[in-house]
Amino acid sequence: MQRFPMTIEGEIALQNELRQLKQEERPRVIKDIAEAREHGDLKENAEYHAAREQQGFIEGRIKEIEHKLAHAQVINVHDIPNTGKVIFGTTVTLLNLETDQGVTYRIVGEDEANVKVNKISVTSPIARALIGKEEGDEVVVKTPGGDVEYEIELVEHK
Image (cartoon, rainbow, N blue to C red):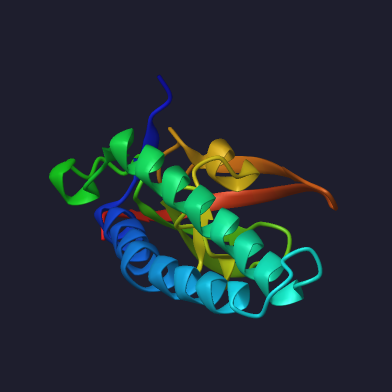
C-alpha cells in the first residue's frame, strides 16, 4: 500500500480543501445542474454539460483527497531530533557553488509543493539528491540545463 508523506500543515490543507469541496462546491454544482435541467432539452444544453463535467471533477478530487488522507503518513519534523541530516520536512539552505547564490527550500509532500514559497516535493530531483546528506556536504543535482553543484549550508527543523 502506497503511503503519502505530508507535513501537519499539508494534512490540514487537504482536510480544508475536502471540507470546501463537500460543503460548498458539491452543493453549488448540484444546484447548477438542477437549474440547467429546467432549461429543457439536455442534449443541446451547454450549461448542463458544463455543470456535469465540473461535478465529475469535484467528485474525482474528493475521492483523491480521501484516498491520500486515508493513506497519509503525517510527519512532524519537530518530533525528530535535529542531527544536521536532510530528511522529509526539514528546511535546507543551499549555496550554489557556481554562482555563490544561496537558496532555501523546505522538503514537503507532493500536494504541498509550491516553488513560489520555496517548498519542494520530496520526489523532486533536488530533494532526492539532498535526502540523507548532512550540513557541509556537496551535492550534484541533475537539471534540464545540466548538473548544478550545491553545498548544504544549514539544515533546520522548523
